[in-house]
Amino acid sequence: AQTVTQSQPEMSVQEAETVTLSCTYDTSESNYYLFWYKQPPSRQMILVIRQEAYKQQNATENRFSVNFQKAAKSFSLKISDSQLGDTAMYFCAFTQGAQKLVFGQGTRLTINP
Amino acid sequence: ETGVTQSPTHLIKTRGQQVTLRCSSQSGHNTVSWYQQALGQGPQFIFQYYREEENGRGNFPPRFSGLQFPNYSSELNVNALELDDSALYLCASSLDRWSTDTQYFGPGTRLTVL
Image (cartoon, rainbow over all chains, first blue to last red; front, side, top):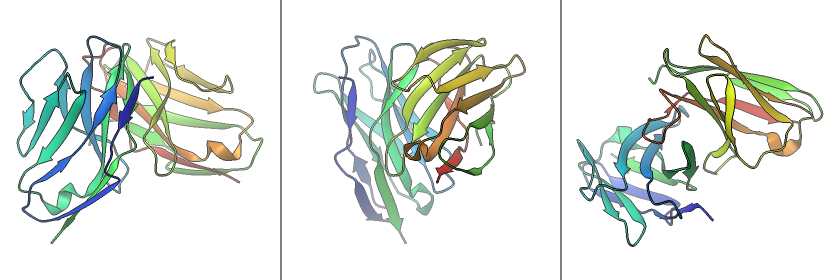
């Protein structure tokens, strides 16, 4: 089965701290793409970062970076210098087939002032 | 903002009714995908349309159907509504149908079935 598991339903940190969200996945595909999406209370799903599975180098986007361990099928998201605006649900996902996204259950992240 | 819009924002229907949800993709995006997000869950893939043809379907019954139009708009139709259809419905558009193309999501339509 093609699945994504996010083992942390909720996390809470203080502003400016660093936080890491965990994600593991299972796929039989040999080539795929991994994503972290953010869904704030406004509900709009926003792409945070993406990683091509064939690339060994971990993707980074400003304060956001990933730790991609292909053999372990692990794809964690690190948020550095967290900000109040980072408060949201975070979903890990990968593409199955051409473009079908398979999502995890999400992690609710709260940044406290 | 992703440039993808959806209407209406909220909708309340009763069991057995039919509903049409609308999505406007980014200009130039040939692919639209629809997802159902139940409360507290991650989105589930319903189907995808590429150049007005269905290009893949998830584990949803035939009463879920869609249309895509040449003007970058699309519809999700659900017949014979059931209570379990209550959810947030998201559309996502992308330039093409390949996994390399990022999907840009709309804000969703919250459907409540009573």
